[in-house]
Image (cartoon, rainbow, N blue to C red; front, side, top):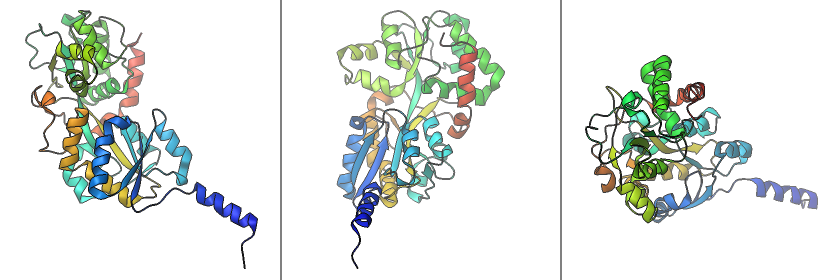
Length: 339
Protein backbone atom coordinates (compact mmCIF):
# COMPACT_ATOMS: atom_id res chain seq x y z
CA UNK A 1 0.00 0.00 0.00
CA UNK A 2 1.56 3.36 -1.05
CA UNK A 3 1.85 6.38 1.19
CA UNK A 4 -0.46 9.32 0.54
CA UNK A 5 0.98 12.57 -0.80
CA UNK A 6 0.25 14.21 2.57
CA UNK A 7 2.13 11.51 4.44
CA UNK A 8 5.07 11.77 2.05
CA UNK A 9 5.17 15.54 2.49
CA UNK A 10 5.14 15.21 6.28
CA UNK A 11 7.88 12.59 6.10
CA UNK A 12 9.96 14.97 4.01
CA UNK A 13 9.56 17.80 6.53
CA UNK A 14 10.66 15.53 9.39
CA UNK A 15 13.68 14.38 7.39
CA UNK A 16 14.70 17.98 6.72
CA UNK A 17 14.33 18.95 10.37
CA UNK A 18 16.33 16.03 11.74
CA UNK A 19 20.01 16.68 12.46
CA UNK A 20 22.51 15.28 10.03
CA UNK A 21 24.11 11.97 11.01
CA UNK A 22 27.12 10.80 9.07
CA UNK A 23 29.88 8.41 9.94
CA UNK A 24 32.45 10.81 8.50
CA UNK A 25 31.17 14.16 9.82
CA UNK A 26 30.99 16.14 13.03
CA UNK A 27 29.26 19.48 13.61
CA UNK A 28 31.08 22.13 15.62
CA UNK A 29 29.35 25.22 17.01
CA UNK A 30 31.92 27.76 18.18
CA UNK A 31 32.44 31.33 19.31
CA UNK A 32 36.08 31.08 18.27
CA UNK A 33 36.86 32.77 14.98
CA UNK A 34 37.08 30.04 12.32
CA UNK A 35 40.47 31.26 11.12
CA UNK A 36 42.01 30.69 14.57
CA UNK A 37 40.96 27.05 14.84
CA UNK A 38 40.88 26.00 11.18
CA UNK A 39 44.45 24.59 11.27
CA UNK A 40 43.45 22.25 14.12
CA UNK A 41 40.25 21.14 12.40
CA UNK A 42 42.00 20.51 9.11
CA UNK A 43 44.64 18.43 10.91
CA UNK A 44 41.89 16.41 12.62
CA UNK A 45 40.20 15.70 9.30
CA UNK A 46 43.47 14.64 7.74
CA UNK A 47 44.24 12.31 10.66
CA UNK A 48 40.75 10.83 11.08
CA UNK A 49 38.93 11.24 7.79
CA UNK A 50 36.10 12.97 9.68
CA UNK A 51 34.91 16.25 8.13
CA UNK A 52 34.24 19.12 10.52
CA UNK A 53 31.23 21.31 9.68
CA UNK A 54 31.78 24.60 11.52
CA UNK A 55 29.04 27.01 12.63
CA UNK A 56 30.49 30.29 13.93
CA UNK A 57 28.23 32.01 16.49
CA UNK A 58 29.57 35.37 17.63
CA UNK A 59 27.02 35.92 20.42
CA UNK A 60 24.25 33.92 22.05
CA UNK A 61 25.77 30.48 21.51
CA UNK A 62 24.03 28.83 24.46
CA UNK A 63 20.74 30.49 23.51
CA UNK A 64 20.99 29.11 19.99
CA UNK A 65 21.72 25.56 21.08
CA UNK A 66 18.90 25.74 23.64
CA UNK A 67 16.44 27.07 21.04
CA UNK A 68 17.30 24.26 18.64
CA UNK A 69 16.57 21.74 21.35
CA UNK A 70 16.69 18.00 20.70
CA UNK A 71 16.93 18.57 16.95
CA UNK A 72 20.11 20.65 17.19
CA UNK A 73 22.83 19.62 14.77
CA UNK A 74 25.54 20.57 17.30
CA UNK A 75 27.89 17.75 18.24
CA UNK A 76 30.65 19.80 19.89
CA UNK A 77 30.17 23.28 21.35
CA UNK A 78 33.42 25.22 21.75
CA UNK A 79 33.79 28.55 23.52
CA UNK A 80 36.19 30.74 25.48
CA UNK A 81 35.94 31.60 29.19
CA UNK A 82 35.05 29.19 31.97
CA UNK A 83 31.77 31.02 32.58
CA UNK A 84 30.53 30.18 29.09
CA UNK A 85 31.42 26.51 29.54
CA UNK A 86 29.62 26.34 32.88
CA UNK A 87 26.57 28.04 31.33
CA UNK A 88 26.28 25.21 28.80
CA UNK A 89 26.31 22.72 31.68
CA UNK A 90 23.89 24.71 33.85
CA UNK A 91 21.41 24.93 30.96
CA UNK A 92 21.58 21.15 30.47
CA UNK A 93 23.10 21.51 27.01
CA UNK A 94 26.09 19.20 27.60
CA UNK A 95 26.38 15.48 28.17
CA UNK A 96 28.98 13.67 30.27
CA UNK A 97 31.89 11.98 28.57
CA UNK A 98 34.06 9.32 30.15
CA UNK A 99 37.29 9.13 28.19
CA UNK A 100 40.56 7.77 29.61
CA UNK A 101 42.33 9.71 26.83
CA UNK A 102 40.88 13.05 27.94
CA UNK A 103 41.33 12.31 31.62
CA UNK A 104 44.99 11.42 31.09
CA UNK A 105 45.71 14.49 28.94
CA UNK A 106 43.86 17.24 30.82
CA UNK A 107 44.65 18.03 34.48
CA UNK A 108 41.76 17.54 36.88
CA UNK A 109 41.41 21.25 37.72
CA UNK A 110 40.93 22.01 34.00
CA UNK A 111 37.97 19.70 33.38
CA UNK A 112 34.61 18.94 34.92
CA UNK A 113 34.69 16.12 37.49
CA UNK A 114 31.65 14.63 35.75
CA UNK A 115 33.11 14.96 32.26
CA UNK A 116 30.69 17.61 30.98
CA UNK A 117 33.33 20.17 29.91
CA UNK A 118 37.02 20.11 29.07
CA UNK A 119 39.56 22.91 28.83
CA UNK A 120 41.63 22.67 25.66
CA UNK A 121 43.99 25.62 26.08
CA UNK A 122 44.69 28.32 28.66
CA UNK A 123 45.54 31.98 28.59
CA UNK A 124 47.23 33.70 31.51
CA UNK A 125 46.16 37.08 32.91
CA UNK A 126 49.52 38.85 32.79
CA UNK A 127 50.80 42.33 33.52
CA UNK A 128 51.79 44.69 30.71
CA UNK A 129 54.19 47.34 31.99
CA UNK A 130 56.43 50.20 30.95
CA UNK A 131 59.89 48.80 30.14
CA UNK A 132 61.48 51.36 32.46
CA UNK A 133 59.72 49.96 35.52
CA UNK A 134 61.99 47.88 37.74
CA UNK A 135 61.50 45.49 40.63
CA UNK A 136 58.36 43.85 39.18
CA UNK A 137 59.55 40.36 40.01
CA UNK A 138 57.14 38.94 42.56
CA UNK A 139 54.29 41.24 41.47
CA UNK A 140 50.92 40.05 42.77
CA UNK A 141 47.41 40.88 41.64
CA UNK A 142 46.78 42.18 45.15
CA UNK A 143 49.59 44.74 44.62
CA UNK A 144 47.52 46.58 42.01
CA UNK A 145 45.49 48.20 44.80
CA UNK A 146 48.63 49.72 46.35
CA UNK A 147 48.39 53.56 46.30
CA UNK A 148 51.85 53.69 44.70
CA UNK A 149 50.08 52.90 41.41
CA UNK A 150 47.63 55.82 41.70
CA UNK A 151 46.93 57.23 38.25
CA UNK A 152 49.16 54.62 36.62
CA UNK A 153 46.92 51.62 35.79
CA UNK A 154 45.01 50.92 32.56
CA UNK A 155 42.41 48.16 32.36
CA UNK A 156 39.54 47.07 30.15
CA UNK A 157 36.03 46.94 31.65
CA UNK A 158 35.67 45.21 34.98
CA UNK A 159 32.59 43.53 33.56
CA UNK A 160 34.52 41.91 30.73
CA UNK A 161 34.67 38.12 31.29
CA UNK A 162 38.48 38.17 31.44
CA UNK A 163 38.43 40.55 34.41
CA UNK A 164 35.30 39.12 36.02
CA UNK A 165 37.00 35.74 36.18
CA UNK A 166 40.05 37.28 37.87
CA UNK A 167 37.86 39.09 40.39
CA UNK A 168 35.97 35.85 41.05
CA UNK A 169 39.29 34.12 41.76
CA UNK A 170 40.13 36.91 44.22
CA UNK A 171 36.74 36.32 45.88
CA UNK A 172 37.48 32.62 46.32
CA UNK A 173 40.80 33.43 47.96
CA UNK A 174 39.97 36.50 50.05
CA UNK A 175 36.21 36.76 50.52
CA UNK A 176 33.78 39.56 49.67
CA UNK A 177 34.93 42.32 52.04
CA UNK A 178 38.61 42.14 51.05
CA UNK A 179 37.74 41.83 47.37
CA UNK A 180 35.53 44.92 47.51
CA UNK A 181 38.32 46.88 49.21
CA UNK A 182 40.81 45.62 46.61
CA UNK A 183 38.53 46.63 43.73
CA UNK A 184 38.09 50.11 45.18
CA UNK A 185 41.85 50.40 45.48
CA UNK A 186 42.43 49.34 41.87
CA UNK A 187 39.73 51.74 40.67
CA UNK A 188 41.39 54.59 42.57
CA UNK A 189 44.62 53.78 40.74
CA UNK A 190 43.18 53.92 37.21
CA UNK A 191 44.79 56.37 34.82
CA UNK A 192 41.67 56.46 32.66
CA UNK A 193 38.15 55.05 32.67
CA UNK A 194 38.16 51.26 32.43
CA UNK A 195 37.43 50.23 28.86
CA UNK A 196 38.80 49.22 25.50
CA UNK A 197 40.57 45.92 25.00
CA UNK A 198 43.72 44.27 26.26
CA UNK A 199 45.74 45.47 23.29
CA UNK A 200 44.56 49.01 24.06
CA UNK A 201 46.26 48.64 27.45
CA UNK A 202 49.56 48.00 25.67
CA UNK A 203 48.88 50.91 23.31
CA UNK A 204 48.26 53.30 26.19
CA UNK A 205 51.40 52.21 28.04
CA UNK A 206 53.47 52.88 24.91
CA UNK A 207 51.75 56.28 24.65
CA UNK A 208 52.72 57.06 28.29
CA UNK A 209 49.09 57.28 29.43
CA UNK A 210 49.76 54.69 32.12
CA UNK A 211 52.55 52.52 33.48
CA UNK A 212 50.97 49.13 34.04
CA UNK A 213 47.86 47.08 33.29
CA UNK A 214 46.53 43.58 32.73
CA UNK A 215 46.05 41.66 29.52
CA UNK A 216 45.81 38.10 28.25
CA UNK A 217 49.02 36.35 27.37
CA UNK A 218 47.96 35.34 23.86
CA UNK A 219 47.66 39.00 22.84
CA UNK A 220 51.39 39.29 23.52
CA UNK A 221 52.02 36.61 20.91
CA UNK A 222 49.60 38.16 18.44
CA UNK A 223 51.18 41.61 18.81
CA UNK A 224 54.84 40.62 18.90
CA UNK A 225 54.49 38.18 16.02
CA UNK A 226 53.24 40.96 13.77
CA UNK A 227 49.99 39.14 13.01
CA UNK A 228 48.04 42.19 14.16
CA UNK A 229 49.96 44.53 11.88
CA UNK A 230 52.95 46.84 12.34
CA UNK A 231 51.23 49.18 14.80
CA UNK A 232 50.34 46.35 17.17
CA UNK A 233 53.82 44.90 16.80
CA UNK A 234 55.12 48.24 18.07
CA UNK A 235 52.78 48.02 21.07
CA UNK A 236 53.83 44.47 21.86
CA UNK A 237 57.52 45.24 21.65
CA UNK A 238 57.08 48.47 23.62
CA UNK A 239 56.00 46.78 26.85
CA UNK A 240 57.54 44.39 29.30
CA UNK A 241 55.40 41.43 30.34
CA UNK A 242 55.31 39.99 33.85
CA UNK A 243 53.53 36.88 35.15
CA UNK A 244 51.84 38.07 38.36
CA UNK A 245 50.56 35.65 40.98
CA UNK A 246 48.08 35.71 43.80
CA UNK A 247 49.68 35.98 47.23
CA UNK A 248 50.67 32.45 48.14
CA UNK A 249 49.34 31.14 44.83
CA UNK A 250 49.98 31.14 41.12
CA UNK A 251 49.08 33.01 37.96
CA UNK A 252 45.39 33.25 37.11
CA UNK A 253 44.39 31.51 33.88
CA UNK A 254 41.20 31.32 31.90
CA UNK A 255 40.43 28.70 29.30
CA UNK A 256 39.02 27.88 25.95
CA UNK A 257 37.23 24.57 25.96
CA UNK A 258 34.39 22.47 24.69
CA UNK A 259 31.50 20.18 25.56
CA UNK A 260 29.79 17.35 23.76
CA UNK A 261 26.28 18.64 23.08
CA UNK A 262 23.46 16.88 24.89
CA UNK A 263 21.69 15.93 21.66
CA UNK A 264 24.82 15.33 19.58
CA UNK A 265 23.77 13.36 16.47
CA UNK A 266 27.39 12.27 15.87
CA UNK A 267 28.48 11.60 19.45
CA UNK A 268 31.31 9.18 18.68
CA UNK A 269 32.90 11.64 16.27
CA UNK A 270 32.42 14.42 18.82
CA UNK A 271 34.45 12.47 21.37
CA UNK A 272 37.07 11.71 18.70
CA UNK A 273 37.40 15.43 18.00
CA UNK A 274 37.86 16.31 21.68
CA UNK A 275 40.41 13.53 22.12
CA UNK A 276 42.33 14.79 19.11
CA UNK A 277 42.29 18.38 20.42
CA UNK A 278 43.90 17.11 23.64
CA UNK A 279 46.61 15.19 21.77
CA UNK A 280 50.27 16.20 21.57
CA UNK A 281 49.94 17.25 17.92
CA UNK A 282 46.85 19.39 18.43
CA UNK A 283 48.14 20.95 21.62
CA UNK A 284 51.29 21.98 19.77
CA UNK A 285 49.10 23.48 17.05
CA UNK A 286 47.12 25.43 19.67
CA UNK A 287 50.40 26.88 20.89
CA UNK A 288 51.54 27.82 17.40
CA UNK A 289 48.26 29.03 15.90
CA UNK A 290 46.77 30.94 18.83
CA UNK A 291 49.67 31.68 21.22
CA UNK A 292 47.82 29.90 24.02
CA UNK A 293 49.28 27.64 26.66
CA UNK A 294 48.64 23.93 26.07
CA UNK A 295 46.67 22.16 28.79
CA UNK A 296 48.48 18.86 28.29
CA UNK A 297 51.59 18.63 30.47
CA UNK A 298 54.81 18.30 28.53
CA UNK A 299 53.67 20.18 25.41
CA UNK A 300 55.69 23.36 24.98
CA UNK A 301 54.15 26.78 24.49
CA UNK A 302 55.22 29.00 21.61
CA UNK A 303 58.65 30.61 22.11
CA UNK A 304 57.01 34.04 22.32
CA UNK A 305 55.27 32.81 25.49
CA UNK A 306 58.07 30.73 26.96
CA UNK A 307 60.20 33.88 26.77
CA UNK A 308 57.90 35.40 29.41
CA UNK A 309 59.18 32.91 31.98
CA UNK A 310 57.80 29.76 33.60
CA UNK A 311 54.05 29.77 34.17
CA UNK A 312 52.90 28.55 37.57
CA UNK A 313 49.13 28.13 37.20
CA UNK A 314 47.07 29.07 40.25
CA UNK A 315 45.50 25.97 41.75
CA UNK A 316 42.05 27.46 42.40
CA UNK A 317 39.56 25.10 40.68
CA UNK A 318 37.85 26.70 37.71
CA UNK A 319 34.48 25.49 38.97
CA UNK A 320 34.96 27.60 42.11
CA UNK A 321 35.82 30.63 39.99
CA UNK A 322 32.75 30.07 37.84
CA UNK A 323 30.48 29.88 40.89
CA UNK A 324 31.69 33.33 42.02
CA UNK A 325 31.38 35.15 38.71
CA UNK A 326 27.95 36.62 39.46
CA UNK A 327 29.14 37.89 42.84
CA UNK A 328 32.19 39.38 41.13
CA UNK A 329 30.01 41.17 38.58
CA UNK A 330 27.83 42.61 41.36
CA UNK A 331 30.93 43.94 43.13
CA UNK A 332 32.12 45.61 39.93
CA UNK A 333 28.83 47.51 39.81
CA UNK A 334 28.81 48.20 43.55
CA UNK A 335 32.16 50.01 43.47
CA UNK A 336 31.36 51.74 40.17
CA UNK A 337 34.47 50.28 38.62
CA UNK A 338 33.51 51.10 35.03
CA UNK A 339 32.15 54.58 35.75
